[in-house]
Amino acid sequence: MASSPKSKAKKWHPEDIKAEIRKRGGTIGRVARAAGLADVSGRVAFLHPVPTANRAIAEFIGVPVNELWPQWFDAKGNRKSSISSNENSPKARRGHRQKTVAK
Image (cartoon, rainbow, N blue to C red; front, top):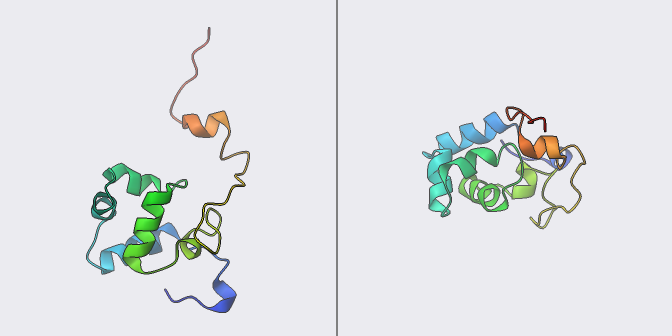
């Protein structure tokens, strides 16, 4: 997936990233392990920022991390400090399957 000046702000679709990893003979788990991470870190990096995993994926496919995930990383590849309130809410951190226990 080649980038053009007009498409820089548009993030890659997660399936396109996964396909590019497979085209290069890798898997998400192998990319994560090569970066010294658990397999799950590579998978979670598609759901929310995991800077080490996101950077490892970007490096593996040869695309700047901010092009893959412009909502999480700036042009220099640094993590953006502004996180949407929904992403950082207790419910989002807890996960959708966890039930709250009434006291």
